[in-house]
Length: 471
Image (tube, rainbow, N blue to C red):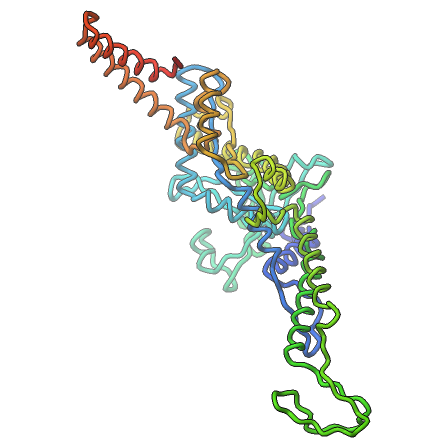
């Protein structure tokens, strides 16, 4: 049986998902009100959804780096791990991955899904890491195992100039739609639904990493951070608009006339004089009497707290600590946020390790054949979520290193040192220099006098400190 062409399948595939992406993006950008506004209706928009998304992403991505540990304790294994680390850092710098990761995480929190693409750029002879728009990404997996993706399609638009530049083909219109279809063994290209090329996959793996913001059990596509706060966000806008209207009318009071059939020239202004019948009554309507405004404010506060609760982002996360809290008390206050960030980091750890593995495979294929991903362990080193007392943290790591619980590399990871291997090598060089200097100075002194013994003791103390041995 002839299979329906992939571009034709994409026209009907995941239509609900793509529609949901569009709605979520609109909500993030402030399109909160539904339906057409009634004439004279006041609609205020306070975009807490955007603020909450940006804030949780900032906590998630604080101080992120990676580490490579050799599996074998040999010079050759350490050398390969060091070369792999240098290659990764170069790719990280060339592609500005710190900015790319942050932007992608905001997109992921909004839409619920995100994607990385890792390829080899033949023109620059380097690894290229991008984040394609997830709205143009489609995936096929095996049966009920959503972790086994066997085909990925990427659909995007090109201008006529870009089409000629990249593929040497002149499209019929000013723009063209290109579809890439990847499997482990093949790469197919379609231009405006017509086959353009079919060739073997040059990498041996699908160069896409599709991942969810938060995983819904038994589902491939993820969950956005926006749906839980939609209702409270809309109700907050409505309540604030209503309160604003009441205050506006209170500043421009309404005149109430009783027992009057007709009225002319009744104006509410300083010095105004009204002529009314003897049995009539006139007064200004006070919309603020009876504590009505306080009720509105209390309701808005309730909506405000509800939004923070369902978003798992306490007010304290925005710097609004209204009382003195100890470190433990602050952590308890922010515990919902910490739990949400940790759930996301569990997913991101696998994603970033997979991306690093792809990068190393491409480096091994095109620049350094000696690199093998099975020769070392990849780790993501996450920065602390909450502010840390650096002096206290350093003292803790010193104790852990001296007691043999942590290695120096692990200690540097915990302190968010960008390149632990480089810093460790610098420490070794300094240690060798100090030992050599102390031996040269020690040879100049004899043990005959007090002054010489004191100097010799200083040399020995300095040597022990350089070796990292506690007195």
